[in-house]
Image 1 (cartoon, rainbow, N blue to C red):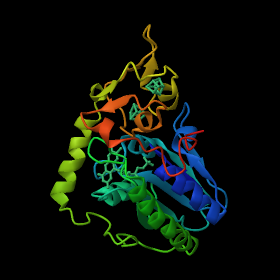
Image 2: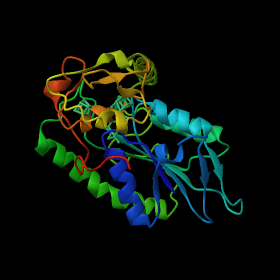
Image 3: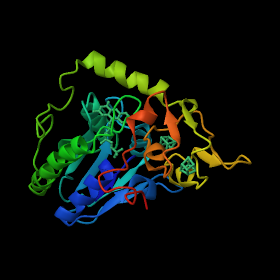
Image 4: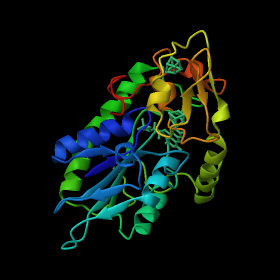
Length: 270
Ligand SMILES: Cc1cc2nc3c(=O)[nH]c(=O)nc-3n(C[C@H](O)[C@H](O)[C@H](O)COP(=O)(O)O)c2cc1C
Ligand code: SF4
Ligand code: SF4
């Protein structure tokens, strides 16, 4: 079973491709976590995989919450193969340590982690308007997917590996810097940083309907989105999938563009 979380769509695409190659099922964390704490029932001989983006050098807040509450049930006859796949733009920072700790806290052990460089969706900093550059990055990622699937099929033990030319764990980033970076995530998650351009907004409600943390409401007379919680997980799904590109996060996000995942706007959560 492959459990994924995804904002713009990179990690979702990866989870679906791996599921296709492995003959496995890919399930979103949101669909498993409707009302109660998430329960994961594994079939006999099934592996347990997680796919997610890196956020500020660590796991997205949504994934931390999910993994700290999930219950995993599996047949005890053989050790469970647990792996994590992380999509990133520049550096995975502390992600592997956080992932292994989260798996350990559930009474399991992570056996393998795989980093995959994809388009960086953090548009307050990174520009996603160069389609050729994006396609080149995605082409490299696409080549890597069958290799990762093969490693999973063989139940390879690979922690802190170097599958994409980039070291896992801290990469080139010193440990203290990665820790500092993740601390900044807490500040960055404040939803007051979001705004909407009223003339551009088409009042469709897509942003509110698709937000994984249910923190957007269409509730003013003008039917403009309002962020109702103090913090969100900052996945940027609202920004990248807005059909009018009307959502802003900081001064530069408008000119840095929109990236609706490797397969376009249809690639959203079911
Ligand atoms: C809030 C936020 C923080 C991010 N932080 C990092 C980071 O620290 N390092 C990095 O390499 N990429 C970072 N990224 C880029 C994403 O990890 C990367 O684009 C990922 O593939 C997005 O996957 P998704 O489309 O499934 O959400 C960040 C993206 C967002 C939205
Ligand atoms: S998705 Fe975009 S256009 Fe639709 S309501 Fe939200 S901000 Fe407006
Ligand atoms: S408000 Fe936007 S960025 Fe924040 S969790 Fe919801 S969809 Fe993701």
